Image (cartoon, rainbow, N blue to C red; front, top):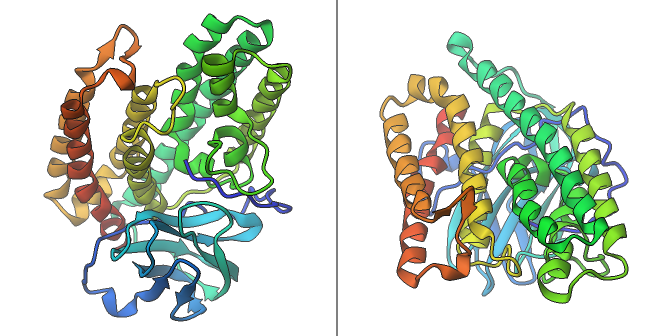
Length: 379
């Protein structure tokens, strides 16, 4: 998960959300759009964006990490809404972020050396208004409708499952709360790119203690995870559980009006795999419960749901790509199935190094074709 603490005065946003825009990325790379890409030089204490103005439409940022720390790059909209992000850029690496910005306004760019905190910010002005993307056969419109229905369905499950978990915490029923923890998180993890786009709610619901911004309280799922698995219930655990429910209900309210773009779907699919690569494969996400494989599977499920929604549009533009995606998803799911235990999964710490390497390799193999989808659907 990404954490950035921001004061979000305007996080009311529901409407304009061209949101999620995007983050397709490609390493190094040059293609037909390369000449239009906006170069970003990300250092340990600097964030140089080649231009700070652009016309509305598909924007491509080519981010080179010239520092010594792994970094991220974001484009924020009104109310610190995340329009697009690209994570896990190692020193020396160049990755690409495609963002579909359809309206004029003042946005902000941000490099985040060390992948934490507010980042190094700068204003970015977008002018004009983008026209509608060509949509032969209506496949793109159908894709966004289909994926919005998926998000709605997952949110409808997230709220009651979180309430069940919170009630168990408040009742002091530690074993029941432990059993419900990964179940509730599954519905969060499946829609994580959408949920994370609300930058004020994300750290409150899913913030890890070590990456919270300065001055932020440690709350949400991971605070309760630590209480349950490490310290035992604490005097304020019930209050934290109640706040978690309130935050999840606020998320549900905001997602009702969300508008998605095809590029956003494509990049959400890749973001979910990045989440696996940066948080689950390392075992950092659920470091107290070691229920990482539940989250891992949920991220893969969410990624595949986005790709499935886009399949007709992808097929129309690149007839060979869907078969490659299907093969790679099947291989990763086959490996995950090996670690199922009843209705859930083995503890992540029970996996051997070889088993972790196999999963990491399969995630990398899937990430490569998924990273192409944004450019394909934007074409």
